[in-house]
Structures are given as C-alpha cells and as structure tokens.
Length: 93
Image (cartoon, rainbow, N blue to C red; front, top):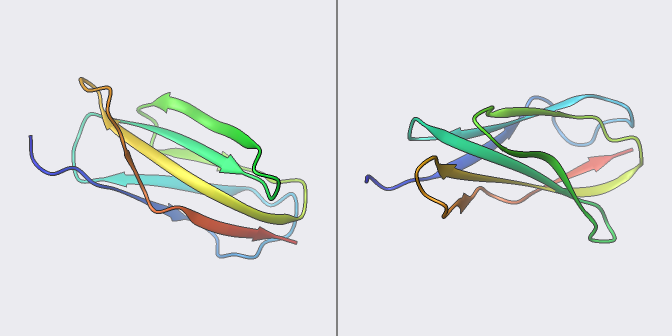
C-alpha cells in the first residue's frame, strides 16, 4: 500500500457567527477511504459530527460561541487503523 495521508479543509474562514453552517471536508491521496469527523468544545467534550463513512464532507452548525477543535480521521476500508488530519481550531462568535 502506498503512503496514506489525510488533510482537512473548511468552506469558511474562522471566526464565524453562531448558527452559520460550516462544511468540513476530508481529503486523502487514496480512493476507498472512510472519514470520521470529531469536534471538541472548550471544556474538552467530544462530539462525533460524522462516524465512519465514505462521505468526505460534513456540515457543522455550531450554536454556541467559543473556540472549537475539529479533527478528521481517515482510514482505508479494509484496514482498521486510521490516520488523523491536522487538528484545527475554529472560533465561533
């Protein structure tokens, strides 16, 4: 298997006002990849925005102001191991 990597992109720049839909996209160099999107609030509570799925995008609509940490994980379907994208912070006003 060739080296595997994953990246993440947002359709909007931080900061954004509360209630604004934000599309998060996972990007990989391989086909047949599943993605998992996670969000952490300032208290460290984890929310699964999307569990393992071949869908490479998820829409996130935060309704509370704060700084959030967004993480994307990606794995090739036939393997249980995954790679993590960059962990990015996003501010909501």
